[in-house]
Length: 337
Image 1: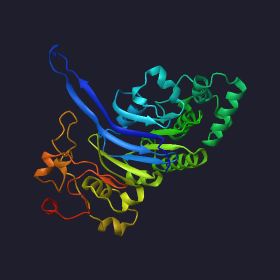
Image 2: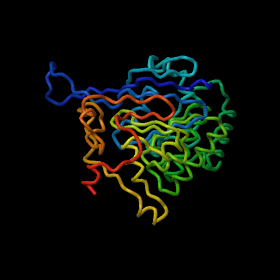
Image 3: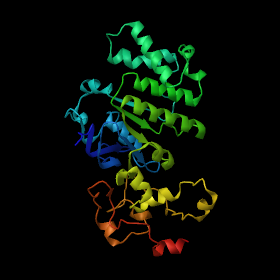
Image 4: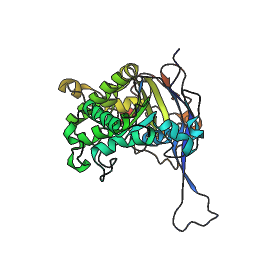
């Protein structure tokens, strides 16, 4: 059996919040951004992570590279727990784990040329390389991501959003990482440009043998690129399964609601599909509901849902729900129809 590239167990991120005027003896308020997420990521695999805004997707990504403090375990393929490392110790692994960020222009230094931006990771992690070798690798990577050689001395503001994201991808891949974490890399782009960037990432993954964590709120985008999909809600895993199984037969009512909102290109099928509305807004992570955190918006919620936290089931298709299964028409759904 293939050994996981990254094995995450019970990862938690909690922020302490204070207000102006709070006294020193006032207990800090706690914001639970990620609450006990576990998964394995295998070499060459793409794990899609989806959920509403505020569900903890980006915080989870940042925790894996120590951009925010976290507890739990994130064990790399060599047996090292990344969460236990100091900043200096983590530097050794940063070449193997790279990120592509949501805002392509904001993630680039406006005072640096494209060539300097892409070369920066090489100069950080491979300091022995000669200038000629660095320049050759930069030009090679620019070509792979669809940038022209004569653009090497231009600045980020001279490029479109899609081109800036290509620069960000080139910068991340120039050190040939084993894992690429993409934090909503296409959400700020037009639909046609989104497709180009997604196809580019899929092509580069095949060519370079990358593993990817791909974060998005658009389930149609995630379906196109992911081998497995994990659905987050209020910092907890609701469902995780192979992409085909999750889209064909979602078991958690939250996943079913998300999928029902995905547009279908066929007008007749779009009119005929059943929309599953979610009651209310996402609860505050500072005061999550007891038991199942989804129960306040769930059409299947019963008394047990408020009393007991559902455990993510083992196996290829994991579900954290007291009443998992195919979509059924409950009384609450009938009342809202």
